[in-house]
Image (tube, rainbow, N blue to C red):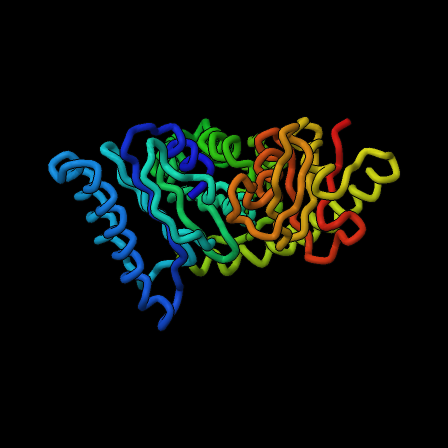
Length: 361
């Protein structure tokens, strides 16, 4: 799941729309309980629907939900599962992060928890450059999920790719082939643009030296590249490719965290920073946050005053009129305003009470 998927779900409005989320398990014996928990949640959703509608009215929705559940292969579940069903669609996402156990029947799908979980997940793009074909993956740690829409995977069908080079002695075959490769990787770059625009994550490139060079030469997205894995990996299984790429990405993210802390020190000297939860909340909602730094496991439930800016921490996030996690809210607001979020190690921001910002002005 990526932000594009969430936007599609958020755009759909029809009552009833059913959302089912739950944590799942990767290994036995913990995953033995997952089918039972899914069945119980589906029964809960079904009973809610039949308490309000006739079976005939909701039979298409229930059939779609049953079809989704029947497609779950519990041998390959990860940390979370989300099901979305209404009269028009049925979508299932197997996710590499945990989700609360919840059934929601509403006019819209419940995506709030997904947004917050997605915001806290270290994700990245992997673009595996090749003629046969170029593939795009979304990565979470060592787990890769291939994108099979919006033009990907993409095969070089022109001369120098699937089609042979022209048999003309007047043509410099090497230069001709190189130019056709440049054209192909321009097309790859254009297909990548919607993904990078919707979800501007770090980009890892995979490929032989020639293809890496061509992409960097022709693509406006070369600046998003954080690491490269050199070599021909056309036949490398996805799970093996993830194991090769993730350590390189992880190393780069560690460097970025160090650089962000240095940027914060410079912002403190220039008096262009804010810290503590209440101050960061205010500046985030004013759209002034350029970079948000937050410790990885920092969560805080709060009650927000009528002015919308004054926060009072509370211990119980389930109380009425309480924002379950003000830190998640801040992260979402910063990202919506095109700010950057950097998660740092726990204990890295003690003088700032675990959260700090570099301000735009």
